[in-house]
Length: 385
Image: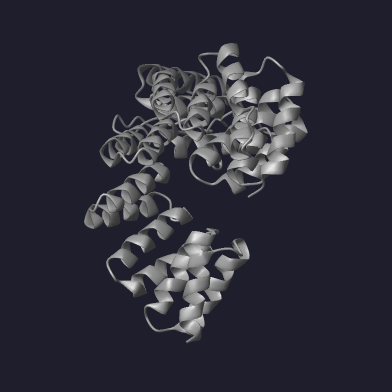
């Protein structure tokens, strides 16, 4: 059929746009009402924003995790340190240093905590880093202390003198110098320790080092009094109680020594040094079972703390368990423990198992440390027969 293209119906078709717009407006109004009422929620997704029904049991999480600042880690570390949580404080300082490598205090405090936790050789490079960033009296003092506890006495002395030169009014600088002087048998140790306390009586380092020097001079009662003042300043710093316990051990008072070591454990339960000293003192007091359990706790807290293995080996040796003694002496050596006494006892453990070949190795190492060691010389002569 032919269709005339020019034909138009008398009924014109109306536009659909007004209706479409009205529907869209109504839908938008309904959506807005649902969103306002919380019935629907907008959630970001991997492919854009999506609108989903509200789930009251599903928490609304932030889309991004905020990055912590170095300052927040430093504040956390300070709080942990004051509370006696040395391991977590050390970790927080390390995180702060990672975020802000130019912050000398983060390295300084890491070094200090490593010293307190029985790892002074590990503290040295961190203390050097702090000095490189800022050669302040405090940073130099911490380096001197790290070196001193690592038995690098000559460098420790020159560093402590630099600390005093950097700030003659730094109590920590004079305290570090006093401790190094004491370890080098210098009569000026007491004068420097007294200077430190005079400059700042509230410095726990100054008060503790005064006690250390007084102990070195044999003034045990005065040393205990100085340690007590240090403990009042920092009741959660276990190394102060360890120092007091060492003084009581020097006096032959095992009972009070054990009490002080227990305070160290209570103050810093995440620190191996308190457990180590408590275990060793228990062994010397004739309680090997407690000694073994406590020394194992020290190792559990810090498997890299070598002295705990050495002291555990000594307890096993005293109980004639030479195999266990050898095993733990080896672990101590693997963790960096050195010294005439431990080498000698290691060698003696082999000797008592009739293994002079291995005994000779360790007895000779003892003589390398001290060529005049009569004990090592006598044991070598026994092996030679």
